[in-house]
Length: 410
Image: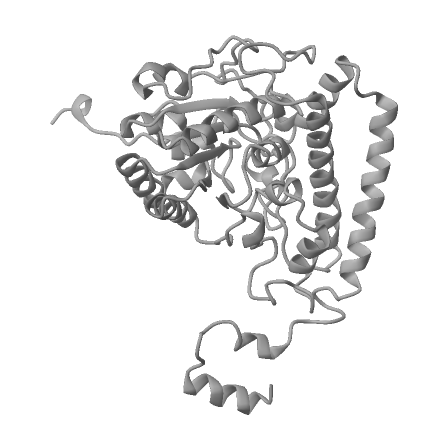
């Protein structure tokens, strides 16, 4: 064998490392409004190109243009702006609380607020989300009490999950929010199974699966796509491509498919990419995919192209693997600022009203935090009772647990 015949292993590398100049030249961004909007019942073979483009509604001037525009009223858009701002302030306060030792762990949504907040408004009561740890906007936009979220983060005596879950791993069945799992990608299979069960029962409810770009490398992702496509499950399969897993750039999990949406093509799924920092585009695509599921046509794979501005979690230092200035160079901008500018452009908002809203939201979140902290934090105040370890686990408590509970005196 000659040297020219020797094999070599290809290891994907990010475009730039810490200390380098941010480069997003590999992210082709089509003009806002230029991507066509097919009929909901379109044959997936006819829209393969949408797996490689990016659906956008808001242009650089804040104007809503193109066939995907018009899915929301100005009043609904103002509500959406409020939800994103609430999530952002909530994030800031909880990050600060973790730094103060009031909780052990937190994960931000900074830069990704439009994805979950807009998607939630495309669902109906009874639909079920199977989220990751970065979709708290589903709860915020769904009206779930922030105090309850904070109680769960603090693991205090009012924690609705009674200290049984890692902070930020919420669970709220009545709000269509399935229990978050720390085992990545398991929720994808669960969502498809839940959707199949809904169809078997001839129900009307649909499911939404959520996964990050890094976790698509897990086998559960592919198992879910097999079952979803084979049985035409009424589910929306969401992939949030925020460019980075905890320390690994998206190219490692994406492989040679070109885009994450393109993964769905091999399973015969309609697959779309959308500007994840465009609230209007996210909602329009979510509504399209949800309608497809609700009309019993089948599943849709949607990739949200966005950027994780903050660290992966409070245990992560992103400066070790990406340039500090990279988030500022992200070409799709800030979802809050973009929606604010659109509302100002159409005459239903102003800089003054925005500043007033910021102050009102800050007061609301601070008041919620004070109420939650009256029940305790990680190292002070009330905590879940020891008896909660025994209750709510088995329909009928086994004898050995009864003995342990008696020994514990609870």
